[in-house]
Image 1 (cartoon, rainbow, N blue to C red):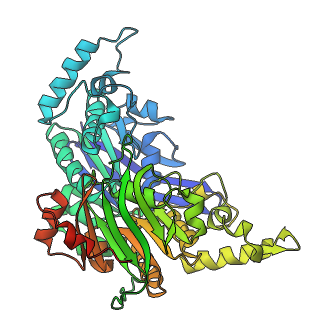
Image 2: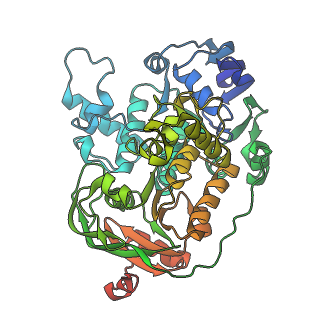
Image 3: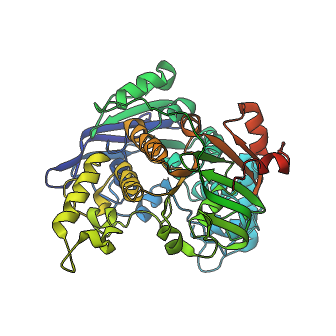
Length: 513
């Protein structure tokens, strides 16, 4: 028996003529280790994951799972071999309990023994030393509990290789830290983990060894203890230079967004907001901070016209948009980037150009004698694709052909090209790294210089440090701080945890009319 749980040898995969996603790549993962697969967006990591998950077959090469040939055609078949991928969207059935979600589907036959399922689940809970109620409905779980349930389900189903695919692109910084805690427990139980990411700091934090991918090829694996984050970044970075961010001093101007006494209805998966008050001025980036259950996402959706508001007022330049919905807020010049939201994201079944220019199709400037001026639309699409450095073959290709970083840049190009008066940016650089993240942050600063008010939920601590002019902190749906600038880290941590709260008078000083 070899020491490897997984061996991928001389793998090549081409999606279409002229586009080779992976060429002669290799990956070896030892049994019981956390192995990092590190590379920038577009390097080929997602294709590796699809090959392992049964979504795609390789064109060339051999895959061995515990020394045996591995060739699966569906994710369900992959699961039968013990290969599980942690999904970006929860697979839990909301109406079922934790125990039912974990135990259903594992050879129980036609009769499901709920009592035995609870006992089995409790044994798993005890084994991994976590706090979880087997009888709790999945719809009532917070983010951490849902994550635990997903992982325990994989353990119960007989996971041999667990694939974690770019978690920081769809969960918060706090959730990533909690995920690390759970992964260490799974490793201690002998489970092999493939951790796919574009963030070298995550690799340094959680992985034993790492394989670097760049331009569809792999390098020999290295021990994480024998390298540095700087060396890893140098290994994955493309030739495209990272330009330093240039941020001008903040000069207060007219108030664009006013939020007063905002309250939202509690819906499953979202934290209800209570008595939220703040303002954002022209040329200001107000960073909204909080943990996974703080309500930052709820706030962004409410202001964008996507939320269920039960009290208070939202105004843009004194126009009340509290009940206007998405169309009403957009009509006043509000754009939004809300990560991982199917309602505001990329439509994979439409072309790149159709995703890029949906608002121009009704713009009189793009009409010629009452008909769409296709040449002018194509020119505008070409201009934006070049400006945002989006990698593509043809503007008429489906958006599904784009990498995750190119999709995020497409969203930026679409939402920022309309000269918005207010931009709502929820974790705007999620799924990007290096030069791509730097480019998008530079675009936010360009909008700021042009006078756009920006409500920002930072993707990470670095983004907060680089971009924020002022800070709003939420804890369990209530604001605990609102101030100019950035508080000291110790103070900020206390605001985020709810241990400390500014007085109402101190926070109302940031409510400009």
